[in-house]
Amino acid sequence: MADPPPGLSGLSTAELTTWFEARGEPAYRARQVVTALWSGGTSTHAGDLTTLPRPLAAALDEAFRWTTVADEAVIASDGGQTEKTLHRLSDGAAIESVLMRYPATSGRRARHTLCISSQAGCAVGCPFCATGELGFERDLTTAEILDQVRSAIGRLHPGERLTNIVFMGMGEPLLNLDRVLESVAALNDSDRLGLGARHITVSTSGVVPGIRRLTALGPQFTLAISIHAGRDALRDVLVPLNRRWPVAEVAAAARDHARKTGRRVSYEVTMIGGVNDTDADADALANLLRGDLAHVNLIPMNPVAHTPWNASPMPVIERFASRIRAAGIPVTIRRNRGVEIGAACGQLAAERAGAPAAPAVAWRRQRLEAASARALRGERSDEPVPVGVEA
Image (cartoon, rainbow, N blue to C red; front, side, top):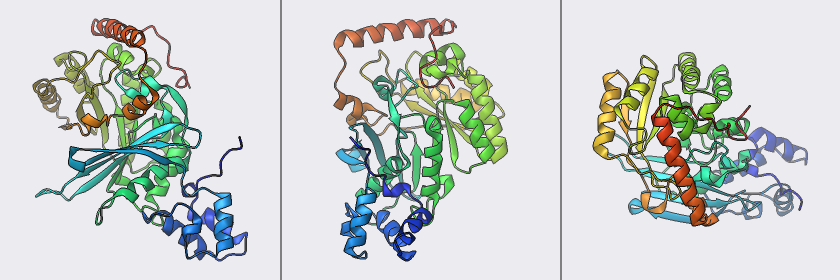
């Protein structure tokens, strides 16, 4: 089958202007289309726009797609405060986004945060992540990334607006860095979403060349590192690309990034009971980040069917946090959202893909138990770097 037409949202106003001018149309046609794309309206193709002559709208629909994602399922939880959407792409691949509403408090305005995907599946293979179980399919196009945002805008309530975008959904953003950077530029563009760069967070599990490239560019969005462990032996198991870029190398790249940009780096730790929540783990992380421009977020693990692990108890997380704070590093304990709808990365897509056979789950659990036991004894993994993250 022929490749589908490109998505309109992946084009800048200047690129769309060029397309119209090549057809003898004025530049304001591009602005009309861009405004309609990002208005949150119900249009499904250019033919819905009454501002365009019919022949021109037909030509636009033939050359481009109004959207590149189809919302297959939208599931709400937390009294409607959390919405998880399963998007189906033109080739059948599934991706996810999560909209989280945070009501206003006495000291803070209401926030609406959207977590979006940058790849279909993921090559990194973190064992506590449902996306890792799915494996890697492909990178997303710029339009496929942005159309997750447009989908969420269309579901906002009157008076609501997106205040934060986080690239923490399916995939490793720095392994699709060109498209991610194009998406960030679009989100920041006043002609499109117009979201300030400091309200955008790009996460990575530790792709050092990508971090170094970002540092050279000097962006003002927030860099988040999915660190999960400060000890190499344990991080080899929890974040398999640690076998390629060890944790000290990741932290050094992030440290340089903070110095160059003046922006604090966020470190994410999924708290797994009896695995990475010990005093020794807290001290290792504190020693790794001591003196850095850093902030640590502790996140209780969402249960994933193929692992033998569960979230750390809250008293354990609080003790862990206190040891990090004692080293002078700011810490936040995050509350899980959407647990009952599988809002963690990849859970809904994995559910739709079908459960793996029971023997496969049992084998994986035994393998993880053995690997984590070796890691807790300080033994480094001898398994290869995951395919797709060697470069």
